[in-house]
Each structure stands twice: as C-alpha cells, then as structure tokens.
Length: 118
Picture: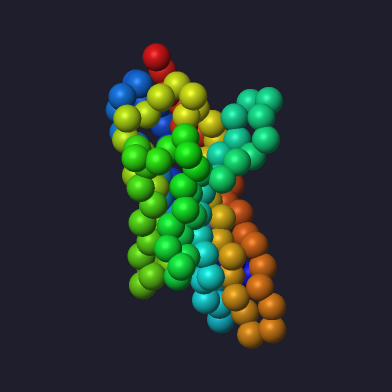
C-alpha cells in the first residue's frame, strides 16, 4: 500500500500562483510515475501533468504556466502553478503509479481544492 498526502491548495486571484505538494509513503515500492489530475464541478477528471523516467507531460491548457517537479529521495511531486486562471478552479488530485515486486498499482491522494477568483 502507498499513501499520498497532498497540501498547498487554496484561494488565489487570477494571475497568482500556488504550489501543490504530494508525498508518497509506504513499504517496498518504487515509483514509475507521479502526477496531478483535476476535476471541476460537472466535469470529468483530467490529467494536468505527469512525470516519469521518460520525462514530463502536460495538458495543453496548462503548458507554459504549470511546472511539475519530482523529488526522488522524498518520493514527492510538486506542481508549481503560475498565471492562474478562473478555469483552473478544481479539486486537484495527486496520483502515483507504484511498482512492487510482483505488480503495479495506482494510488490517489484525497484531493486539494484550488479556487481562482476573477
């Protein structure tokens, strides 16, 4: 099992910045990839950014504004969000694809609210 703990959401004005953090903990696992999804009211959950050994991947809507970073020592991932827009308002979920000795599993954080006011 892997537990993900998120922090850093909040209320910010349009044009402002926020930094989300997510730390993974557990036993006997390694991480294939980590990332962030978001879900706005009435919409499907969508990928925001992902980081793995192969590099990074961003949703078109956040390219140039958001940056995903990973700390392999701490098993943590961060999402630096700049130039925030009201349409970025959503619950942001951290996820991790963890590898164990015999299988891999996906894990999700509890979600953190990001609200951008106009």
